[in-house]
Amino acid sequence: MALSEHVDVIQRGPAVWNEWRDARTEERPDLLGAKLRGVDLREARLAGADMVGADMRGSHLSRADLRGAHLADADMRGAKLRDANLEGATLTGAQLRGADMRGCKAADADVTAADLRGADLREADFTRVEVMDAVFTDAKLRGSVGLNPYRIQPLYSRRLEVGPQIAYKLITPSGEGTFAGGIDYLEALATGDVVRIPEANTDEFEACAAGINVATLVWALNEWQDGYRVLEVAFAAEDIAAIPWTSDGKFRLFRCRVAREIDLASIGGGR
Image (cartoon, rainbow, N blue to C red):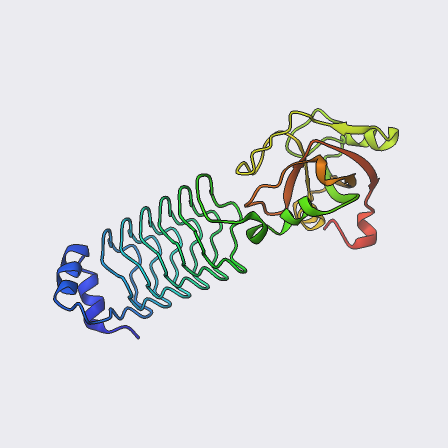
C-alpha cells in the first residue's frame, strides 16, 4: 500500500509535488497501488518511484520524469504520456491501451507482457526495450525507433520462409473481399487464374490499404458473418506487399492463387 503522505501530496498537482520532492531528494516516492486516475502529473518528477499496480487511467503525464520508475501492472489506459521520460522504467504487465506516448523516451525500458493495443507511439524511442509478449495490435508506430518487427509481429517471419505459403481470404457471398470489391475470388478459384494487384500498398505502418488483403485462419473465422466464405490462397514470400507491424492477423499481397474453399462445417467454423 502506498504511503498516504505521498499520495496526498501528489494529488495536489505537479507543482506541489515537485517542491515537496526537492526537499526530500533521498526519499523514494512510494505510490504503490495509488489511486491516481485522471490526476494532472504533467512534468512531475517521478524518477525511481514505486508505482507498481497504480491506477493512472487517463492521467496527464506529459513530459513527466519517470526514469527508472517501477510501473509493473500499472493501469495507464488512455494516459497522456507525450514526451515523457521512461528511460529504464519497468512496465511489465502494464495496461497502456490507447495511451498517448508520442515522442516519449523509453530506451532500456521493460515492457514485457504490456498491453499497448491502440497506443500512439509515434516518434517514441524504444532503443534496447524488452518487448517479449508485449501486444502492439493497432498501435501507431510511424517514426518510432528501436523496434524490430520480427520481435513484435508474429507474422513477420513469413518474409523469411522459403517455398509455397498459404493464407486465408474472407469473402462475401458474391465472391468479393469483405472490405473492398472489384475482384471475384470465386471466379479465380474456378479458372485457376492468378489474382494480381501490382500497385498494392507496401507501407507497413498502414494497417488497411490497397492490395490482396489476406489473413490467418483465426482472423478469418473471428470476422466471419452469415453467408461469408473462407478461401485458402497460395503465394510465396516475394508476393508479400506488406506485413503491418501492428496487425491483428492481416497482411497484403501483390499476387496469389486461390487454391480451395475451406469447408467451415468440417472445422467447426461459422457460428
